[in-house]
Length: 237
Ligand code: OAD
Image: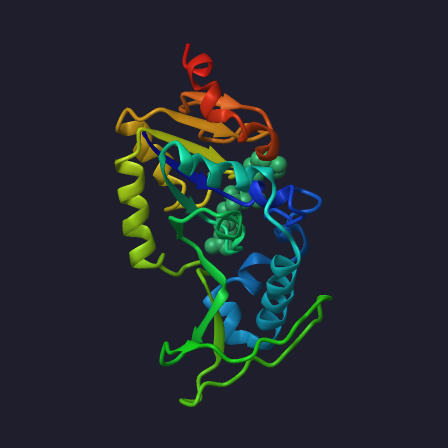
């Protein structure tokens, strides 16, 4: 069986990583997404954007995968599993998943905003958020930025192609912890629905996908994902 998992911030919530759109604790409730996560924002104040990403970089390094990430990794004992994630953390990999496609990039990779050269130099540790930190400079004079997709930027070609493949060839798509509102990524479950592939949504809250998902489990990732494959016969009754 080929299982593809499409994950969002909710799968990492029980590891202690804030989601984006939670009204109180969400990242977007605290900062203006377009100021801190767009190429315009970067051009206007790279020091502010860099400081915010350094803090998130620290936070992701300080947390651990939860039972949800571990369950998905363990499915590889029973199925061919691909993980398509919108998350820029590395918790799926750290849990042991081998085929992870990061459609919104990674907080653990950096490149020059001018010449594109990969940056492997030191990254300052930022345990507490601060207002402003000057990003390192590339030898070409450009600024080093995180390898994440900002609003208005295209998704990385390779990850997107591999994600389309993984969704089109799946026998089952498990959509977990995403509000399903950010496109083009949110189009992946719609593609599976259009192909007649069974789609299981795991999310304590309803989303725009809920109506078209084959099954919507109003459960949290860390409790729903362990044992989900064993539950399949009863879910599709
Ligand atoms: P959101 O913050 O939009 O949505 C998180 C979803 O997780 C919500 O629907 C919650 O109900 C759900 N959730 C919360 N706790 C959960 C749990 N324990 N188990 C399962 N689900 C839970 O995050 P994303 O959908 O990932 O893009 O956001 C998509 C994109 O918007 C992000 O990748 C980011 C952001 O702007 C970029 O930065 C490009």
